[in-house]
Length: 161
Image 1 (cartoon, rainbow, N blue to C red):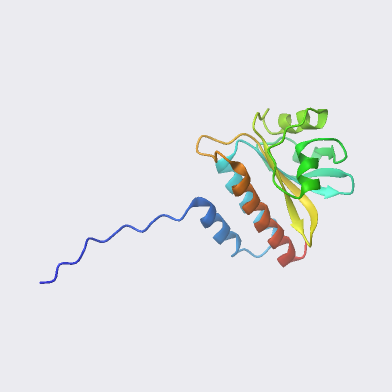
Image 2 (tube, one colour):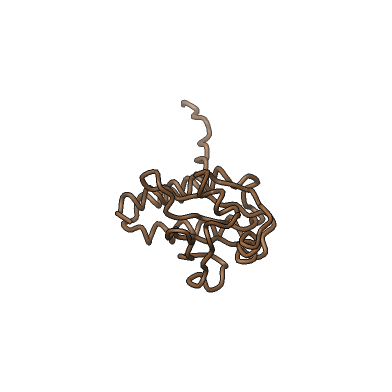
């Protein structure tokens, strides 16, 4: 008889890849937002999705953030939110300012927050900010965070947000 090699267990799909695959199957931008924040809840202690409205960032959805609907932060003041907005890239920068202190407070007194912009047609429409990485969270949050905001931006385009 022919001896077959032992069957190999399938390699697990990385959690981010699985989450992004699920995002491709939903049918609304609100569902994508919920999925992105559910994923972020597993990787960071807090997450906050802020919508850009002119010169202000308004709280839209969050994880482990109280009174998200009452959050309003000025975009003109120096903070990692402004840096993410102006550079159109994820950032770990933590400039000393009142707005930065407010953001860190909202994110559970985060000491290592990160933020990345959500782009639609070369325009920043929202910013996703996250708090400290959880125990199994990323050492470098930027690559993961940028993939999440890319998926969210693509959903906004797909569903016409």
